[in-house]
Image: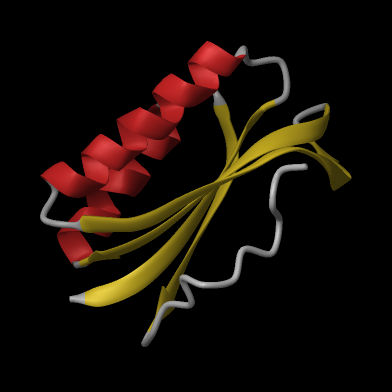
Length: 106
């Protein structure tokens, strides 16, 4: 299994309850598809450098997890259908840095 970081950008007009359910939904998807979530970071509402689909801000949710090809396929399949996600990025690592949190919510 490999280590991954996945960052989701959710629409700025979502309520706190919707953000929490979104976070829990993708946590459950990773765990059910032979993956293991190591850490979830909520970076909060941050400005975007460029507009994405007419949004100037987005909620950032960052997952650090261990998984395989099937885990990635399942996550990306669900993200592409989810209308509350405006952008995402998945990066593969040999080793995860779980100590540092660069975008702590203030």
